[in-house]
Length: 184
Image (cartoon, rainbow, N blue to C red):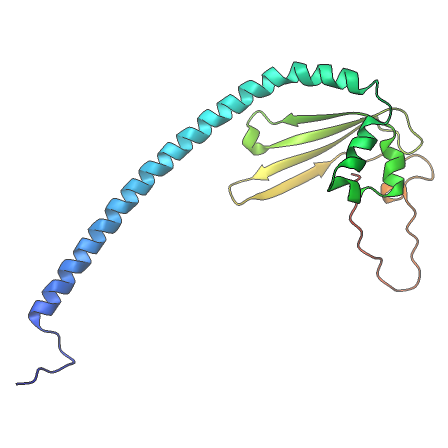
């Protein structure tokens, strides 16, 4: 006697139900373990954050001492930026002229280090802009990895009020070349 291939036997159905219920149980146990791991990871992140904050405070006076020495080295920050493998390529000739007036640079983490940080560029009096401090703030938003960036609005001096202190005149209807720049 040949069984109808379209119909499952009662034994096959019971085996399938048993396998399905075992699979569901295994998945539920796996989720419980995953939840436990997530809880441990969150706790670890909090402990790491506490240590980061503690050492950030300990580093501050050392950074201050270092900054005092850096101030006595002519064009230190210009040289540092030009010498950096990635940043050096972003500095135009006009940026380099401006960076000659950069006297110090401060990086400040938010109280909650995971939330973001700000970079303050301190300038000596210069022919480009009125400001002696320009700050750029990077705020990390949620857990999706996106970031909000805000910056000081630059008060350019007379004749320097074009973006980045450079006059980009339009010639015809062509689009200007996109140019990566570092300055603010």
